[in-house]
Structures are given as structure tokens and as C-alpha cells.
Length: 373
Image (cartoon, rainbow, N blue to C red; front, side, top):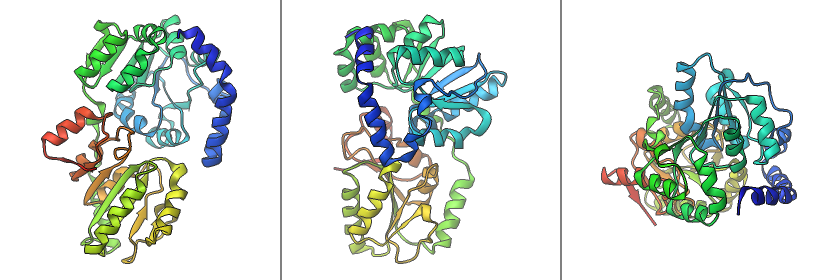
């Protein structure tokens, strides 16, 4: 499949795109807002000639934060535009940067939408986080002479096999990238094999190692545990859980309660649209549960605190004695293991860590990661 056929299929699939957007809006009403931006309509005013950074959702936005702040410090004369694809990513970008950056959703990968967006923003550099590869956006940048850098790039063997099946689309797209900054040498070789120019591929490690922890964070967490009268309670967190993991986590917590009836679990679903469903699951399973968003105090009888707020994950990690990182008991590839590790928390996760193989290996070698099944 080449880019022309891909574009034709994308246009033919627009009714399905609209249906999916409608379905997601039923689960998370924020998806029904700012739809025009997804088609390069009603774009906010953006000063031209700056730097465009694309981070698809929350995790990528957090990972991009040190880089974006460095760009703002080193090039204060250049406007920075940060795009994403999800409402949660949008909220995180606003919380991280406020009015320091311009922000909108990235339009869908249609030639006319990409052209309208780029002609509005007119960046002198495009930086795409991880592996958010959109052929028409990348080609539109190449046509306009805009260099495109892929930052913190990762590519599992499974994903590489998928891209290889569409070599007619993948190879010319990767050849148009100006720089591919990958996390590991194995991933660098996969990018080269798929068509990235060898001289444009560099191994830089993971940007997630650049995480900075506010020194006040552990102090605030300790104060809140004291307020809860939970200083001596065993407190563990299951963070960024996906469908199919919450039941396993709750079963493990039930077993823990048999020996430590004062134990407290902080359960943090990855996606906000699952908050209500997971809350209902906790109640249905008989756990005394409070929602963080409701402002209810954690009492001695509380068994589960549902972390249903945005932008608090590091603080919730700081509250815990030990951390489970989700997306790893189901084949989602895991999530950022470095956040709890940076806070000095023992970390455990499931076996599916293919998005963080190098980081997992380093933590494992240091005795800082326990894998469970």
C-alpha cells in the first residue's frame, strides 16, 4: 500500500472515524468538543515560525515536558505549539505549560487537513514524540522543507513486523524524517531496516530518564498520610491499569486484607472514561471505596482509594509504599516504570513490558523491578 491508497482508504473510512468519535464522546464527553480542530477548522491563533511538538496523549506529554521546557528556556523568541489527540492529553498539556505554549488537537492525517494546519502554524521544526507516525503530515512537512525529528522513538519487534507489511507506505515516510532519536540500538536497527536513512538515526536513550521530582512531593505525601492516620498502614498503588487488570488487582488486595486488614489500595485506571466503571466494580466486589475526585477523607475503614483525578499520578505514587505499574498484565506493553522508581518505590509489573524493554532490563539488573504473572 502506498500513500495514495492509504489516503483514499482514510477518506472512505471517515464515517467510521466519525462513529468512533461519537462512541468515545458517549464515554468521555470531552471528545465531543473542539471537533473542528481535528479537521483543521477553528484552529487557535498560532504565531508562525516556531517549533511544533506532537505528543499523542498523557504519557507522551509528560515525557515531552523536560524537552519542551528546555526549548522554551533556550529559544524564548520562538513560539512552541504542542498538539495531541486526546482530551486527557489536552488537559495535561494545559496543566504542564499553561499559556507558555499554544495548543490544539492534531488534525486527522488527511492531505488537505495536514496542509491547512502546517500553513497556519508554519513551524521551522517538527518534533514527534515516540512513534506517532502519520504519513501525510510527515510528507506535508517534507514538501514545505520543515525538518521532522522523531524523539524518544521506540519500535518493538512486533510493531516493526506490522510496518514491514506496508513497506510501500512506511519506507518513503521514514526516509523523509530528518532525525530519529531512538531509545535502544535494537530499535535503531529496526528503523534503518524499515527505511530510515542510517545517518539520521541516533541512539539517545529514553527521555523518561529526564524526569524531575519536586522535592516537596514526598513531604506533601507524608503529611497527607499522617492526616489520614495511615502512616503505619500498608499502602500500595496499582497505576495506569487497563481493562482486565482491575479484577486481578482487587483479587490480590482481597488476599492482602486477609493478613493485613488495615491495608489500603490506591487504584488508578489509565483512561478517565473507565473511572466510573472501575468505581462500580470496587463497590460491587464489596470494597469500602472512596473517590479521590470527590474529596472524601480516607478513613480507617477505607480499603480502596480510586485515583480518578488528572495530573496527580506522581503524588499518588509518593503516597504509596510499593507500586504496581499497569498495562503489563495484559498485552499493552506497560507504562512508565521510572516514575515510581524515581520516588524510591519498589516497583512490580506484569510480563508484558515490550514498550519498556530497556528500562525494565536496567531496573531488573538493579534489583528494582519484580515481575509477576
